[in-house]
Length: 181
Image (cartoon, rainbow, N blue to C red):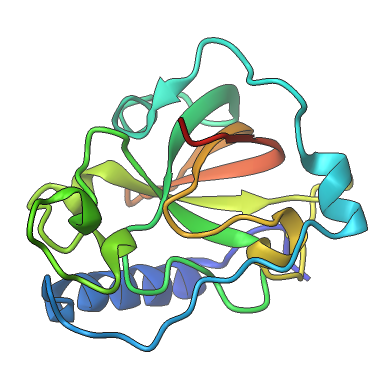
């Protein structure tokens, strides 16, 4: 298995993400359930007991010029009706400055993690891929691997990668789940 999504896979994923954003209307119903079933044994080794310091927001990480640099990034899982990459430990992460639909008074959206009411969503979302110690993309759903759900705030220690088209991906090996206050 390749260690990262191919350009074609990434393009298909971002096209699906974009379509989901366009089609998702605040207040519309969805049958998507968000039930984590992890963390798995491997996932437990990837979870940090304490939050790393100096985390960049997603918007700041997207502005980084250097690739292959180690960064710490904080954000919330979401950005589309389905922020998960099926069968892989990968998901989209949104900037904390964005407002989820459930944070808008009176909004009855059943998929608040899609941030469908956010006009700047595409400029504040990136892809996180969880990698093994050998640097390979893990072939296990992120929810099962890490025990995370949509809208969880997470802090990832990762290598930042920006392709020729400007798409930013975080290749992460460690993750901290911030507890809701």
